[in-house]
Image (cartoon, rainbow, N blue to C red; front, side, top):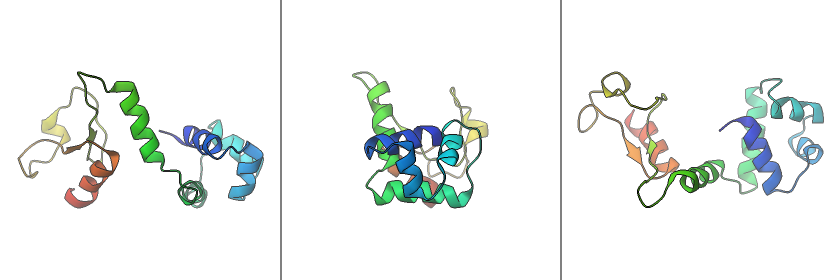
Length: 126
């Protein structure tokens, strides 16, 4: 997802307006609006504030994204899988150029049924 969506999710889950959120994060209302509408980038320090605030308030953004993707794409014929790779790729996947030959079973990518499982593949295997 992106910062705009995350600000909206955090605000909605915690029932905060933009002014309240700016106070909680210790930034100006103008800064929140700049982030929300993509007018200015967010520095690492402020990015940490946003994610720490969400986490400290029980908001697991990855779980929310996982749920949204599964609700949108999963059905009787499809299952949503998440890839454990440091780089992104598009379909159809060209395994020869988008994977390592040194994976456990040769060329390919690791897939998991959750974001968390895929993230563990990134940190442990790559």
